[in-house]
Length: 133
Image 1 (tube, one colour):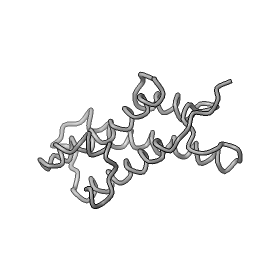
Image 2 (cartoon, helix red, strand yellow; image 1 turned 120 degrees about the vertical axis):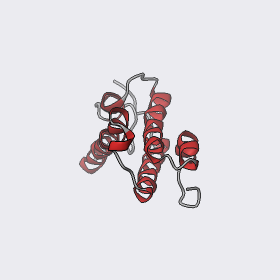
Image 3 (cartoon, helix red, strand yellow; image 1 turned 135 degrees about the vertical axis):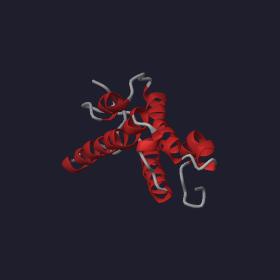
């Protein structure tokens, strides 16, 4: 995973599960790392879609991935919030509510998900807190 460029914060959350080939829990922990980073950056205590809405989709957002000046930048911010919401809904929520035997996850899919979560982490790392009015 390190040669693939997976973000160190992602690996910190799911390294043990990856080493044990426990892809189900590796996915769950990787996506949890995103909520943890948002909490750390904002001080919020929410989870899932609620934390995304409060941190990334409010106006202005608590964490902005760009200057939010143009319509394109505001659209990018909205799209980023949707991407993070989608990662929670598609990967974290099922692993929290479904039995592992009913939710298969192939190694290639796990690797791709870790790359997606890496992208999310990098964007969060580079985000800024715009002034709140």
